Length: 531
Image (tube, rainbow, N blue to C red; front, side, top):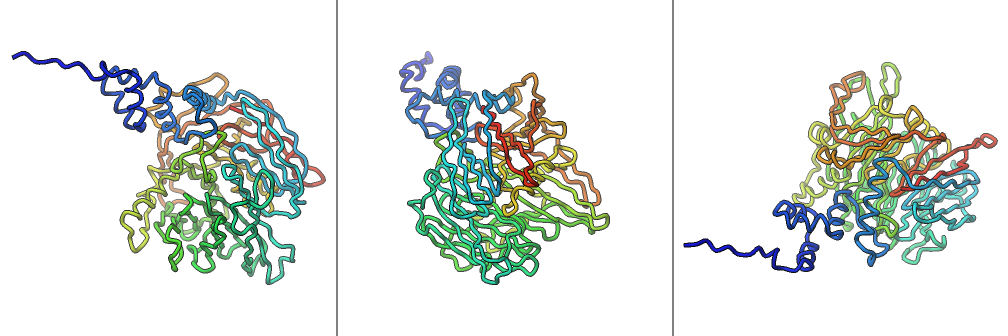
């Protein structure tokens, strides 16, 4: 009996139908299809819509929503151009912008640079890109002097934190949050309460001054994190669209010696603690009706310290969460946002302070959230460093890897009310920082050793891949060796000019120049390097 040979279905179906079927698959399914046969591999490799699905996932971004009718080939070309530009630090254009006035606080988000000075004047710049010119949206007085602010261009919202003008020694000092639009600086139409007021907790050391303050937006919620010195910090979270207070740590306490805070999504956050050897606590406030406050999901312990060592500072910094996908560029997937944590240890025996930096993806924290939702344990697990830190982080000694000194000194001088962690030196999985030899360098944690052949190397740029473990040897600080293995790629490029600090967004590096005018440090020029 002869074997019957049936024609391959792929040879019979029109290519348009095959492409339409494949377009309904996600990137994992498309990659599996490429290994089935040469015909499918060829179709997927040559069709822009299919390749775009794969490469958007590879870069861990959300497709930008500006022009849904544009050809996928155009979107794919832009995505590849940005990837190549960042890996080689080969920007397409440079634009210099002169800036005037003092600086109280400033921010860079999704192509918008916003600066507020000590007199309440606000400057909003829509920055130039590689394909378009920038413009000044406003340069005006707010009729108030904010201490800090946060913005989300995808929702046209900016919130200003304003302490009242009463003396800091007053026992009844208040502060207020003003919810406005970026475009007009008027009351935001979706804000249930355009002005939200709260009392400032008195500190025995600092009174009711803001020793450190951080304001963050995450979709329909925003938070104000206040430290009044060595005593306990305070965190308040509101839903700005409904106007209700969701959480106040004066009612439901945070862990002892909480130092810093960051949203991991719009219904959960992390808080760092200085207690013992340091720890990172994950909280969920998804159940807004709970009378017990946020749920303590997990506590991740930092490496164990020696008897005479202590954690002095433990700050965390991350790209802000958008309420919607960006219309200007590619937004970062929620789990791929990188947290950069600066930890300062002090050795009591020698009174020496040493800075370290910890890099960790947001997905690590979200995984604990997912485990909690599946099992909902009655008690938060306490996870030692050996179980969570080694494979998920890169822990670096700042003195040997790169220098943040100039950046941090600048911030401490400029942001007398705002937490220096609001400075935008991390975007997505990239971190920009100065080097000790005057280069600008970008650390990219969207790297897998199997992708090495996809990387492009360029003359004039120093590029290195770090896949070997970092081992911080046991010393006066750490009781035993500390190992971390999260891989990353680093690009360095020497510039013809010196900058006092750098900022970063999806498509740009900003080089900031600072002038000293009558003893005041002010930003005088911004150089925009566009990819």
